[in-house]
Length: 606
Image (tube, rainbow, N blue to C red; front, side, top):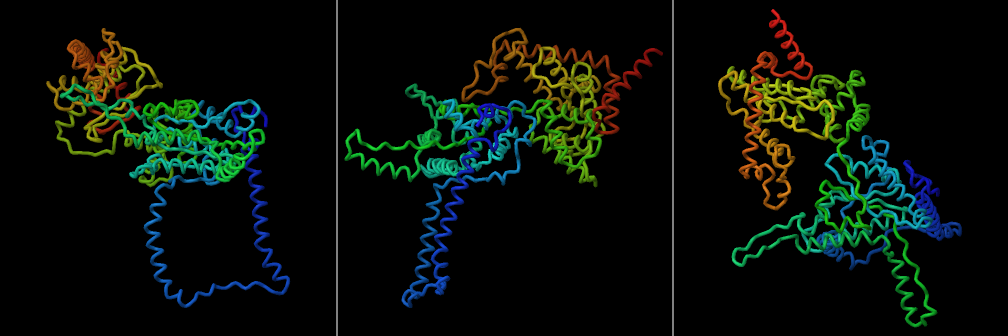
């Protein structure tokens, strides 16, 4: 085959080595089947043509055997009950999918950008392994690691690879390999790879997928950091890592990843016979054994904890290629949104360019699975409303429910409603005034997931960096509710508890990790131990750092008090809107702020 195709960005397909080997194997199986059928029907056909047809009947059972038959059946059943479970203990629990059984292809994988391109190139190396090995002298990749957050398409991509390659897909969950009996886990791993080699020789190649491989491949040092216990009697530090049994599982996995050229049973028998013959032959006359052919296998491991894997698994010859599946970018989310919306019932409004761009913007941090689930939930909301297609409001409601929780209306007292409405309005006004590049999405006094009210706001553009001013604005937004309560009611209550926790966390991060508050010492460098409580406790435990955190919080609260005192009309406008409607979203929030600002301007001019 053409070497240029192997390095291309399109799947080799039928022109690859795997397809040619698979077709040659199919023809051999067809010829073998025809020969067996010919041998089977030859004798009955000859008897029939000779006028002596063969008559089939049940075999005659002697009388004495008939009396023993029930006891024999009972003993056989008891033996099967005892022996079959023992024989099944070491059986590999994998599931085999034929290419025709897989419903997804690479055309269905969207929003992954360069990840998809890298996967296609890896797949082409697998499909053209013989050309790459024989003509270029290269060693095809034996195993690759898919790492990334849950729901980013690792399993989806692996299935699509098997569908495009046209080879069997052996799926196994690493947790199902584990066994309480010593040695059975190793046996299951060996059986899994044995089935992979068998399928690869028969089909020209096979893909094995190990889901959550960290369940059996975690570092033998014990999750990166060993558990340490100090013995006060003799001042020894005792490290408790993983047991020898678990280390043996990883060793078995490492061995099997190097077993792709293991000879078959027939080749082992021929080799044994040749060895016996060579014992009696002079060295110059010894018969040379044919080296076993390497099985074309691609093992794919998937995990969201790649840092916990044993380093030996990531060495060359094992999982020597890691492909990171990250959350999709805005352009990637747009592709995913287009893909799923085209398959789900929706109103024509959702086909507008601005709506889809808006949807891509508000789903920042969403994985492909989360986006699909969002549309499924939106369809449920439309169904409850008696409609057959989702609308924009259904998506908004589904997003709010998934991120914050179901609405749980409670009957507040009149005073509580005013306090909560003022509190949330204070957050929204500060976010509107100091939150540069942020948009206000939802403002509500409806209880959700334990929160009496909420303000949902996000970046107008996808951002990866924050400066000091932006970090301080987050602290100021957190103080908006407390300060509003103090300005309008003279004191604050229990509501701002979570706001203070958030503000303290941001301030401690500025002081102890980002160098944004004077000191350049990073408290993150001192963490990582098994008993580490986290960055914030380390910062607050240091007297100088704690004073700096308190200074940031005090200055932020003072600035917010000045800001809200000068913009009381904005707070009161949003408070009144909340008292009337309980919940306002998006443009309704900005419209209320704009009207209040215009009214204040007119009043001031008069």
